[in-house]
Length: 88
Image (cartoon, rainbow, N blue to C red; front, top):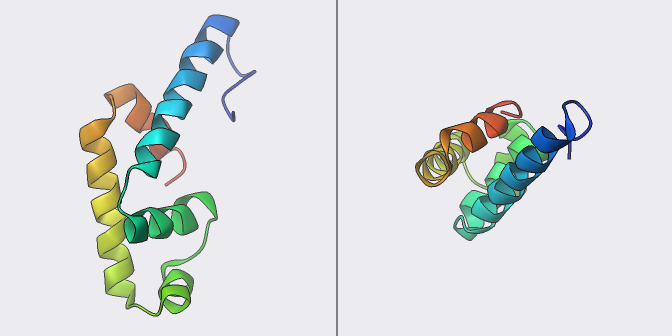
């Protein structure tokens, strides 16, 4: 959605498809990993805030985020993963 309107209509369709692929891949992450990823990347929360919310250590939050990014990198194409990196 964020990239729509920034480039020609053909690119918008491809970028929209990539964003859809990204959201579907995020939905396939394990529950806790997905929730930590969403809180940090989509909601913009700090590691400490997420740790307090889930009552886990900051180290665990960082580990879960790293696992999420590794899983998404393995599943997504390079171009789709690069869209994700705009938000991290």
